[in-house]
Image 1 (cartoon, one colour):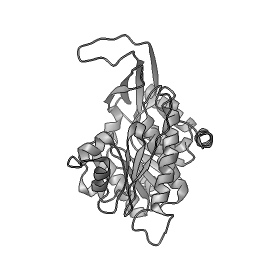
Image 2: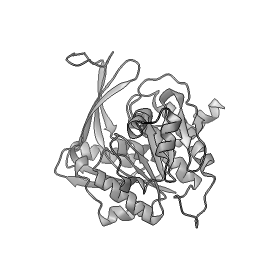
Image 3: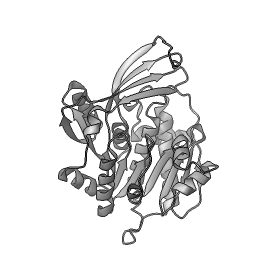
Image 4: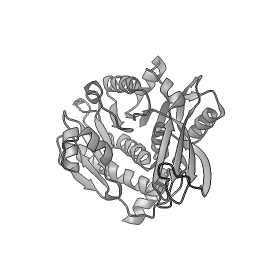
Length: 314
């Protein structure tokens, strides 16, 4: 059981504020912390804490921020394949208001240097059961990883965030697409509803999980019917990293379930709709735990915490 993540890592500079400032406005922070983040890093740690054996391919600067991110990911159980480059480690400035909503500005830094894949990185991707990708690294690298994974029979999961146009050459290698409402609206602008957007994005035999914030997630397995998975009602402290926690936990649960790449008839797996719905329920519980805590990586729950939360909610 293994998951590979190819993606970004940032040092998050988090400012707690009463309200997120409007353009031209200055507000005083009530607190400040510097914590590990970045979509790839968040998702790798989330998958590892959710029980998967995770390998993370990432570019980091030759600086103290890079050392810290690599060390803390390894402490979370992630095998880190880190390129060290002559650029500052990626960073993000995050403001979080009293309701837990956030505003984020990212400087890619070393993440922009993750160009193509080395032979060792390709081998790590091909050896995994699940590959989890995002879009905070160069698109050519995302495509190279998806192609290598697809050729090896690895299940390819793409979280299309930050949203951008997705080339057909990439989508043809994606088995599961994870998007939120905003991303779905941009990728399927003609769709009149979440169900219609999911159906459009699920063309060519692809499965889709469309997250709906507090309303839960819409699961549409390839060839199946849409299923709404409700969210858990909890008191929100900070939404930073909740979507990444969802993606990482979902990948780990799919890895555990034995779902296989589409078209892999020689390797039959469990019923796809049932497996995706179960994974979305598990991921929803993980995300519900994460929003009750501050920070991205610091808020990500363990497998034991997720299972205890689910048991308490029954």
